[in-house]
Image (cartoon, rainbow, N blue to C red):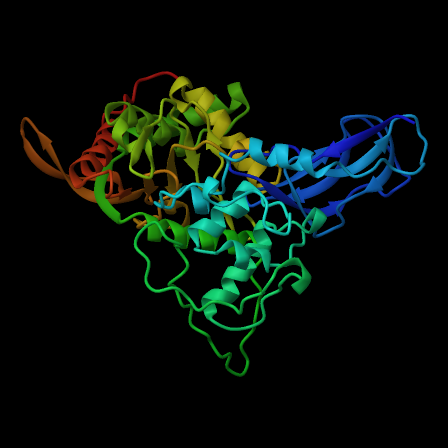
Length: 456
């Protein structure tokens, strides 16, 4: 009987595991090539995984809500239609090989701390022989979890491996200094220690949540309690991490965008008829941002420890509000290689896929600089939080008609102009006030110098 192992594929930069959220096929069901088989959720995006072969689903190895690592066999498909005894589970050595391959793809939480320790300092296997993935080993090292302590954590992964969820759950309890920590049976380790007290204040580069004590709020009569969904929790953690890692500074500039407003009003109907796309302000502003990044590439970098990584590509993230109220940041890859038509198509396509929950993992990866449009909600300016591992983010305010002084050879006079504020937040570790301020000023200059007679 020919059987094919369905493995959890690599799903993007720094993604090492996924939660099975729904099986679209049951054991015994026929499956066609490219037919959706299972829905999974990562810390980046939700996604459907299609079948790579046609056959019959004979075994499901990870049930709903279980966490699988990249490379794990999650199902078995028989290509000749037989539903016999499934093949044995893959050897642990296969899982280890996959884990080693993704060792450099540690999650953003670990990737952007300033600690200099290496995952090599914690062995792959504990005294009990239990295997620990590079992700778990790195988190343990960053958070000061000893091997004895690690061995005491009960794993919920395949072969009782400790997953990221297991170790983060343990850290949450340990940080609060109380509660019950799920631990392994005593026979697996010589001694299972009690939960350690929260560590003393750590320098930059330690666990970024280690010293944060969240307030405990008592609901009042009539209050409604709503549990955060998974995406909201991830956003919250990412924002707290970013504020901890990067000292934020924000510079503000006002730009006169009258030429842009008039040009768009004149060309948007023709553009829609010819391209089948709406011409919004976003691609026009993105073009100005790309030009400014070329002039000041120092904002298109990332920090890794004490190293500055200068990005070759200009990949613009565009913060997008979802119908659920959450936020996601799809990325326009190589934005500097696109003309206005290309930018408009990318902006519209990514925004639509985000709203329809059809983004692919690669659609939200690789961003080097982010733009967020707070003006969509009528806000004139904001102080956006940097989207790690980037070092800067630009907020576009609402366009307003305002009275302004207009200089002419015959003297100054008051006229009505379209203006907006640009808010530029940047990481003061690597972007100083001069660079951060000159960059946002240059964006404004490109907006004000926009040619009202250009063709599209």
